Image (cartoon, rainbow, N blue to C red; front, side):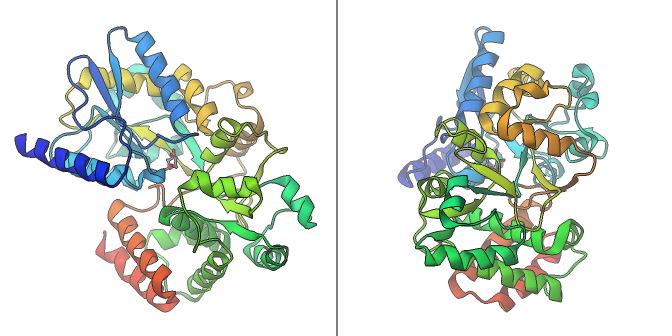
Length: 421
Ligand code: GAL
């Protein structure tokens, strides 16, 4: 334990020196304190969590919610720090994980506890979509409580910018995007805003989805389609061209500054998940289809590439009783209706009142519920690839940014799937 504490202390020091804001240092739980770990610190991320935390405290008198969030979109810092805490047997009382293969890693390595009894008690099997439950279940046991459904394959823009540029509408394919990009550049603007490496990976999966279609996209990440197959190398080449029309070389900041450049008009489009709507509606006071708009990213109309934020009960949590109360809040109708409108996501539960979700979220909810919609899963946000494979893809993309060698990228990715199974 002492060893663990030293490890955590070292990490906290590293985080502070690196300028990574942490809401609470490790070990905030204990007694009547509940330590909840996530990466929801920035505008558009923290408001939903705060609303749920407040309701949790009001329903559970005497318990303090300790917010242990670590900043950095997509958990870019939080996941590494969490991994060290788990290794040091110093888990928070509950932590954020994505449904899908990312969670499965923790289950297989015994880091999280079975929540099937809680599901039975709360009747959640009847109010969550089967596809989502499948992504939380391993060998018949359920291991996390989802708060939401996010959509990853979206192209965001400002309608007025398209009018100013004389563009009839957002591009429906990546080829059309590349055509528009030339016109946009001639008008002195950047076609596509981009942010740190995880946002590039988010773009990468989106281009692959649009170019390959959902079946081949899924086969690719399941190891059934090789990275050196001609259609995949063609899609990788498209990704390279798309990225060359972004502000990659000058971009700074996380996904919020990426979207700020679209809203300010220096850039025209951004590919990002729908946490954008929480940010633009909340912090930026913009309205759907007036100040901002989104369509399915090029080539992916009718496809909903989903991800889901879920909370866990870690093995060795200091306060499992309080953690279970927190999980009840996460799974409740009230909790989800407080969280999701602020977060820019739709509820995981199927039994919520759709009228609480106007604007962008109304559109998202209708698409999610439409039986004709093809649902697939995000790479960057943990659904279709495990952590080891995701980490290898990160390294390969980092290298590709330096050398731009597509052949190398395909060959490396081809090798990594087998190596990370
Ligand atoms: C995702 C997460 C979302 C949102 C996003 C940007 O991984 O699931 O809830 O936080 O990162 O930070």
